[in-house]
Image 1 (tube, helix red, strand yellow):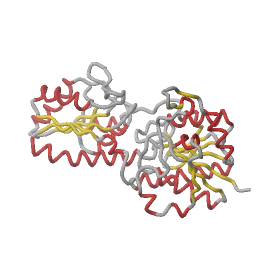
Image 2: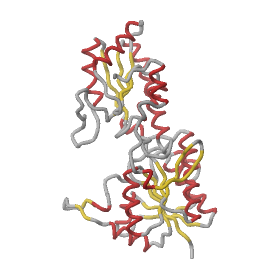
Image 3: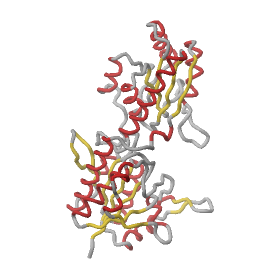
Image 4: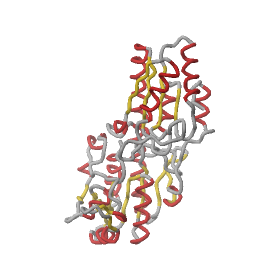
Amino acid sequence: MSKNIAILTSGGDCAGLNAVMSAIVKRADALGWGVIGIENGTAGLLEEPYAVRTLSPADFDGFVMRRGGTILGTTNSKNPFKYPMPDGSVKDRSDELIAAIKDLGIDAVIGIGGDGSFAILNKLATQGNLPFIGVPKTIDNDLSLTDLSVGFDTAVEVATEALDRLQPTAASHDRVMILEVMGRDAGHIALAAGIAGGVDVILIPEIPYTIENIAKKIQQVKDSGRNFALVIVSEAVKTAAGEKVEVADGRYGGVGAYLAPKIAEATGFETRVTVLGHVQRGGSPTWNDRLLAQAFGVRAVDLVNEGKFGRMVAWQNRAVVDVAIEDAIKECRIVRTHGTQVHTARSVGISFGD
């Protein structure tokens, strides 16, 4: 009988997902495993008929690996333990999902996701005694026990390029330019892009700030003879009074618009805001995300082949390792406020508004 691995992408999309799947399919084929792709995360198994398809190396030419997004589709709103029903109620459909996996003759599941997805998938694996391996992907890079997650490098590259484009227009118009980037719980994107993009102020949720301190830094820039300033802010940054800034449906967003008039009033600089939003998730993955994705995919299949489950592949000390999923999702990996990157930023004159 053939041995089958099911793969799925879950949670928010990012660049590099197709590269992970490409490596999984090719490595699995070499080791004699078949691969079944589940569409739209776990939701694909709750459809009639199941939304699945067989995947082979022929499905993954060089073009697919370069594509952003996920060819299988994904969802971050259909938790099988609280599945939204048409009448507005929620229903626990986890047993249905587990039955579907067994009905399809699936011997192992590889899920490509973040902390929220892994919490759900690990709970399913425990409940249904399902062999499960996790591959970390999140532009926020906030999973514990891995230095990098698929999608982070591309998101930082996009944000850095945006700063490169904002700098000359800021200088042309004597402006302060604020770039608002993603970062639900941690400020890794803003911190890394801010250093790489040579900003004057980085605002992240881990470090409190005041408008006065931001204005002080911008005034120093002005006094030095420069006619513009760059500010990068993570979407999860609160107001100076400690209040969340959210759009109507409860998602983060709008902190740049909150800051702009306050900075303008405090500094006298005309101030403009650019919100990158989902631009950071799309596009072709960087070389680093492609390399990381394929290294993760290969290791995930090797773990399946070795019968080693309940693990998440991870990048540590320039090598792929594997760690217990429970440990990886135990806590959010936020920015270390006394770590190397924060020290580097402060040492080159970047302010955190504190």
